[in-house]
Length: 63
Image (cartoon, rainbow, N blue to C red):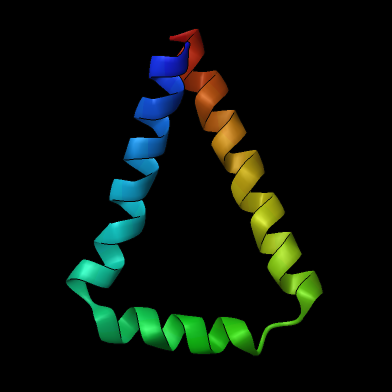
């Protein structure tokens, strides 16, 4: 179990690093746009992301 959690964290770091590595200018623009978003919008985006991740995890674990 701890190995799975560490593997998931490692994959998260890899995926999070792809955009800044490939296109630093695009990621800066995204951060600037996010800074102007309301707290509610950011929370909603976070919630949608978490639900999508949980659904994907459940789908992967079933197969």
